[in-house]
Image (tube, helix red, strand yellow):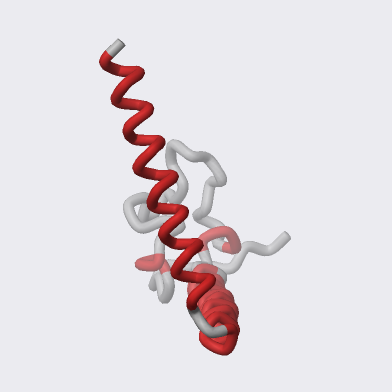
Length: 104
């Protein structure tokens, strides 16, 4: 019984808060709301741009890892590399001194 009363009070408070927000928005001039909408849209576009840029940079770094093209790479999750198993398939493997290109 007390839980139901508590839920009703919470819902009533949420409803009152939403009514207050709607009343504030109705009193706000349209040009302010339009500016706010543009600001949100521009922030979303900026976020997409930054995320894409960071993804490309990260991808370029990961594509420099030479392990998959090395003769010592075993392609087995238990022992990835017979020479340097601790750094295999990590960024530390970039520039590995023992890298030998696999010939197919």
